Structures are given as C-alpha cells and as structure tokens.
Image 1 (cartoon, rainbow, N blue to C red):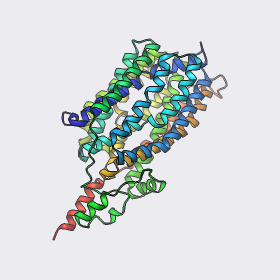
Image 2 (tube, helix red, strand yellow):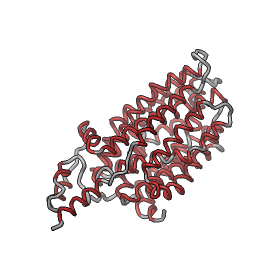
Image 3 (cartoon, rainbow, N blue to C red):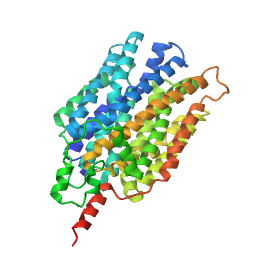
Image 4 (tube, rainbow, N blue to C red):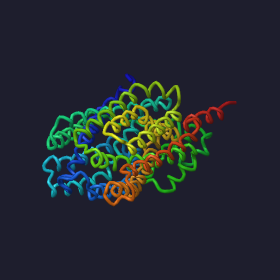
Length: 446
C-alpha cells in the first residue's frame, strides 16, 4: 500500500476520494427527492421509475460515444486534462438541487444531470484506471486497481454515512462544496502521468507483425500519434486480436447490464415493499460500502497474487448473482441488509476484469482499451433500463400479472449469471507486453 500511494498516485487517490464522496453522498436522498417532486406523499410512483430509466438510457447512449473518445484523447492529451472536465461538470447538477428541490428545479436538475452525465458517467473511473496503469507494473495492477476501487468504496461509506446525519438540503449543499474542492485539488496537486512506451507496441498497429525489427524502428513506429476518435474497426480489432479481451468484454456487458438494472430498480422496490427512506437507504449503503472497502483494501491485495484475477473475477460474479437473487426474494426488511454483506466478495469483479483488460494492450493504448470497455458498459446502460424499468414498474403496480414485487431483480440476477458463466471460461494468458518483450529477446539471441 505504501508503494501504491507514492508520487502522483497518492494525489490521484485523494482527488478520486473527494469526487466520489460528493457524488455518492446524494444517492440515498435522490429517490426521496424524485418521489417528492413527482408523486408527493406516495411510496410507489411509476412515473419516477420510467423517468429514471429514460435518463439512464439517454446517458448510456451518450457515454457509448463519449467513453472511447475520452479514453483515446487521454492517451494523446494527458490523463489530468481529461479528468478535469468531468470533475467540473459534476458540480452543476449538485448545485441545482443544493439551491432548491421543488418540481421546477428538479426538472432543471434532470436535464442538467442527463447532459453532464454523458461525459461524467464512468469517465472519472475510466481515466483513473488508465492513470494507475501508466504508473504501476503489470504484475501489481490487480492490487492497484483493487486499492483504487477500495478508495471509491471508502468514499461511498463516508459519503452515505455523512448523509445519514444531514438534512436533504444540506446533503446537496455539502456535496456541491466537496465537488468543487475535488476539482481544485486535482488541478493543483496531480502531476500528469508519463506513459512509458518502450516495452510494447500499440495493439492495433502493424507493430504486432514487426516486433522483431530494430529498437530504433520499433520505437519510431510506437511513437506515431494516435487518432483522436477510435473507430469501430479499432474496437473490432481489439476484440479479434485477443480472445481474453473478447471474453472480458462479454463479462463487462452482462455484468453492467445486471448492475445498472439492480441500481435502477432496487431503491424503488425497497421503498414500495418495505417503505425505506433516505436514512434506511444510507444504512444499507454503509453496510455494503464497509464490507466492500475492507475487501478491496485488505483482502484483494492478498488474494489477487495468490489466486489470480481470473478466479477472483468468477468469485465476485458468483456472489453478485447470489445477492441479486436474495434481494428479489426478500421476505422481511432485514434481508436486504444481509444481502448487502455479500459486497465483501462481489466487489472483486470490476477491478479484476479491468486488470485483465489492461494486460491485453500496450502502455500507449491503456486509455483506448479502458475506454472501449467503458463504451461497452455504456451500451449495457442503454439496454438495461429499457428492459428492466418497465418490468419494475409493472410488478410494483396493482396491474402486475402475479404477486412478485422482486421479479425484475430476479431477471437482473440471471443477467449476472451469464457474466459468471462467461468468466469461468477465461484462462490466464501472458500479458501482451510480456509476449512482445519475450519475442524481441528471442529475436536478439544469436
């Protein structure tokens, strides 16, 4: 942990913590704000569910285009410059609800949040992963990604716990202030990362066929400027060149499909089923966050080298399925709290999947690879609310074909099961850069 917190990484972790603190602390309150603005005095509101699903679909469509662009631009212009943009844009919707939460201001917030989230949603995490990959050796990336996710989980815990003791208006005002501080901290303290391109060539270039050439010619080709916007051909080339990358992309799609479906439906389900409010949502998130933080900061750095990312990915996805099914069949108010404890295992999934992806490309294409995976996740963000929001609204209403309020969450669990089955098929392969260096050394032998 000491080595991972040195230099720019320490400042990155602090900036990410502050940013996540600001964004996560409003999550327990946003359901109550939405319901109060659209359906005052009610615990079930189909309009709120459909509006939330529509927002997620539009945001997912926007990020589908923006994530690969942002990732590739960061390879060319630097991680710090691209990280600054979403951190500043995050301030706008928080400030609107910090000022007022009546129906008019809620609609203004809704439009602002939808537009800004097209750039902000997932881009901070994507760029942070690329920054870490620039500065951490391949054999330690799984642990480093786990620490980054642990920082996010600790911000999640602190933010939601802080919300537990604030009024709704104060929650958004404090979140706005912290978001401003995070952007200022990033600009002042974070050094831009230096991408070391000496050990490997870009995966999508002709270098893959010419790695045995001389050092000088290889270096010249490696340093060719990247295109600004990765094309569909680039994505297809990534998927074709590495079977492991293709499998990870499938896992990313179905895992994100399930996660977005769960998060879009769960709070409306719990409010309708067990009358949860802001404070109970905060309690639930604190339990999940504490378990996830302990796991990512303490367990994952120990287990990743011993078991490997592939096995940890499967373990995480298995428990992800289990906790979604448990939410769906919850028979009492305490069951969701028990399901939240499963986060001690299911938080393994995302950092392991990202680490596997990072090892399939060279240093000069970390942003492109992570951006393409984020783009695939964004496509899942489009599909998920279209599939699951109407299902949730239907089974929480009086028009449900049969009495099963958690039916949509069971369907979400089956999507996660597909990701789990695919993850079992992933086999460990040598990293791309290791293969290239080995090939180059073999060629140099007399």
